[in-house]
Image 1 (cartoon, rainbow, N blue to C red):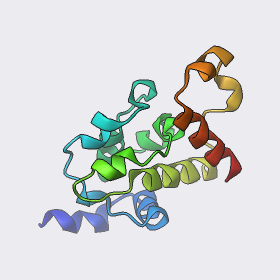
Image 2 (cartoon, rainbow, N blue to C red; image 1 turned 90 degrees about the vertical axis):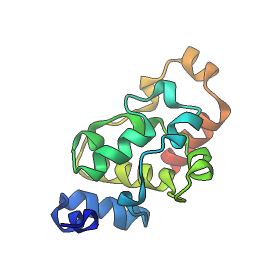
Image 3 (cartoon, rainbow, N blue to C red; image 1 turned 180 degrees about the vertical axis):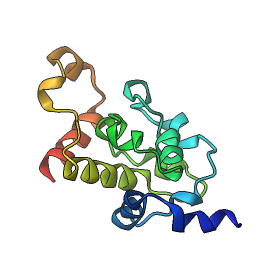
Image 4 (cartoon, one colour; image 1 turned 120 degrees about the horizontal axis):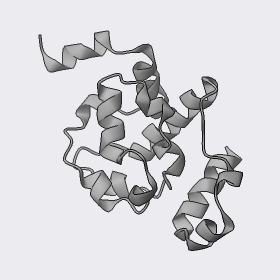
Length: 133
């Protein structure tokens, strides 16, 4: 069996992530550059490369994670990715699927004013993008 043959055995939501994001998850070979450059990585419960890996493996934990909600969509990971994976689009697809499933997500009231004042401006811009649809 060839590694790329795994696509037929993926959980249905993995195919949805790929369809919504227009990204191939198996293209990622886990170099970690996305996580190394992420300005929000310290706030995430899963590193960006872990999100991709868990999705590659079809583990639903990725849909319950807060990482997709914390992602600032700043495109640093995309710029650093040697395979050209647009990880913010993957994170957006994960958020869409989590909302469809009624899963937990980070709400504005969950962030204290103190934390908000210390947040990188790109994180605030990303949050506004998510809230605005």
